[in-house]
Image (cartoon, rainbow, N blue to C red; front, side, top):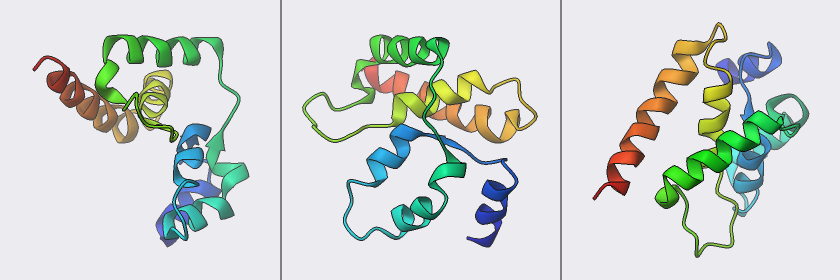
Length: 112
């Protein structure tokens, strides 16, 4: 995890607050404990109106991306919206291409 630690410290790794909220639902989870140590530096909670619109658009277009019967936080649409928002940043290939691959795969599931 040292490389991940350094990415967070350098400001090169981030996630929406919804990811932290989802991780926090698991008891005694190693990943959550690691994320908690970097909460202020790793997670973004100031969502822009465009970001929130992207989340809504994703959920409207791909309703099966979340389990509507679950009461737990589901971060997937937020992660995809963040990838869309940051697609033109220097880390484009690291973030955007991998997330969009997952996005397209999820879309294929909704067509079935």
